Image 1 (spheres, helix red, strand yellow):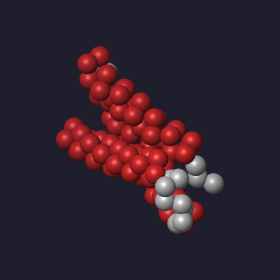
Image 2 (image 1 turned 180 degrees about the vertical axis):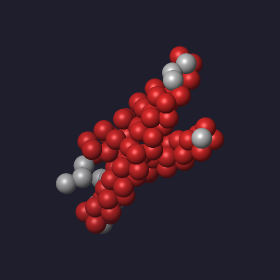
Image 3 (image 1 turned 90 degrees about the vertical axis):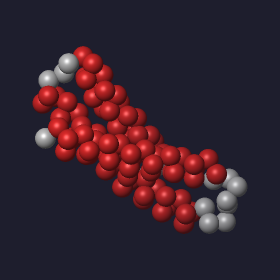
Image 4 (image 1 turned 60 degrees about the horizontal axis):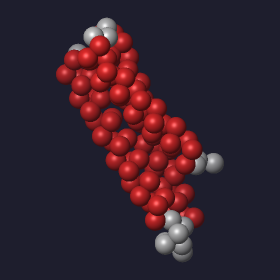
Length: 99
């Protein structure tokens, strides 16, 4: 079953890869390494988006009657969905700009 641990793994992996990309700009990484990092961010953010949508669907079905108990999980869902879309968009814009 899709859980918070899987989403957290994808969330922090995508942030870590994007941080490596940003650090690589200042450390003068090779262009091929920078493109590889951005492609990794793109793939991980797509996986994060898909798993977050599935998690949100399960959360809505499971928590139909328990609104107050799941407020933190709903916030987690919104934040991870927003971060996945932002990282995907930024990485794709940079990849198009570089190519």
